[in-house]
Length: 438
Image (tube, helix red, strand yellow):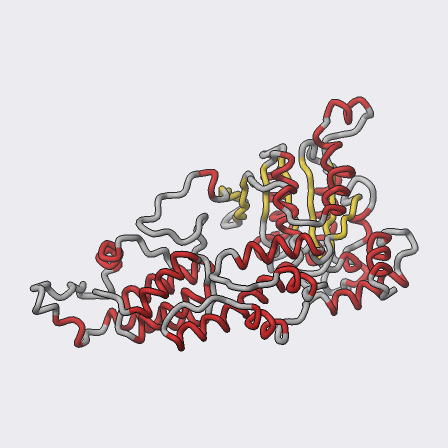
């Protein structure tokens, strides 16, 4: 089928920016409207691979699947070429036939792939490309899934934030890299570091970069995999996660949202003994009373360190804290360059955008560029050809997108002013004074 000029331009744009979710979603919708349901299904599946839960892609997926199951006027074949109408199994849609006709396999929706969208068949991922999932069996049907990977990113891949990276290197990484020196001073090869700061500022990416710097396995387990409604199972899950990390040493065990797993016991009501037991079990694992934690580095992240039980912040546990702030100017420039590079642009004053996005988190910057791209895409669809993203689109997006860090800074200001008797939040105090809000 020969594409009209609009689709020729849109497919060229998709090829230039294969990870642009908004663009690919609009292409899928237009294909569906033109009766090209199989191609629409392919693009919708890629969108869901990149952005599970995308509303537009889910809508296209449902309608395209229904169209492919329902006989219509497009099923009569091509009399001019003598082709036969596509066959259809008696029950359901023939996915294997569709994948063969499309020249590539369509990834199942809601399943993340290690790589981005590709042209042609998707090769099976190499073992190093995807996290290894370890299933730990317990009593009865009690199982825990733990993901283990070897990150290939380092702190050099983190844009800007030179002060934060220097503090991490001096206080955490360098002692871990020189075990012979640590042994001479009677230090064990274990450690704990708490990363805290506003949401969307890259604490998880920073944790992966630290694991990459150490050349260690990176072990993660989601909160929903740890928490269990049945009495005693949450503690078993926590122990299983730590045992998996100890079996992979040297390893970095990453505990995200530590304020949920290690909430202040003084704030837990008397009717919630299970939560108290969870906190006690986590403290027990960090202390390694019954197991050896040498070679295990525990990284934790939270937006609200003031909600973490103070017992976790004592020496020998998460005894170091590092503030991960909204990206500074060099970091914002690096993040913006990354997102703009995936889209056709013209006349973008990057310095002006950097100056206008102070206090934006990394997630806010990605949302800003996506919003600006939506404006350019709407113009392109109306004009029937690709029109680049320009400064006016960015200015329009800046009028709609606001930094999401404001509410966090308000709470942090109160903590820094009234709850810093032990100097725990000195870095936060310095930052707030620099911003002249304290």
